Length: 147
Image 1: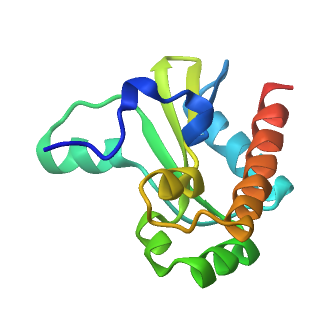
Image 2: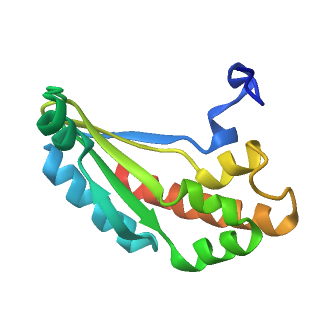
């Protein structure tokens, strides 16, 4: 299989990668991330623990790992007006995993940027505005988490 892009040539800014570390317990970090998501304009319509599911179903012995499916409905609606395929990447996931007890990694990549890189979204001013708007919200999210 040939990839449509060369991952080695991409800068994390190209796909909107953000991450930070929170020095706190796993459940406390999830609550903090959830609260800050809500404060900056993301609802959380979906959330789940893959680690709990996998530990139960296949005895995976995974460390705590949690997904918060963040969504700003107004932006999601604009994105769907431009590309119905973007729904295949919904919601904008913010992930919290325990690197070690008391140390949680928070991670996000921009589905809007990834959709553009993969040709799933138009390369036009409207999409650029959607990318910019979501980028500003995510930047604010991570700034507040790091404060």
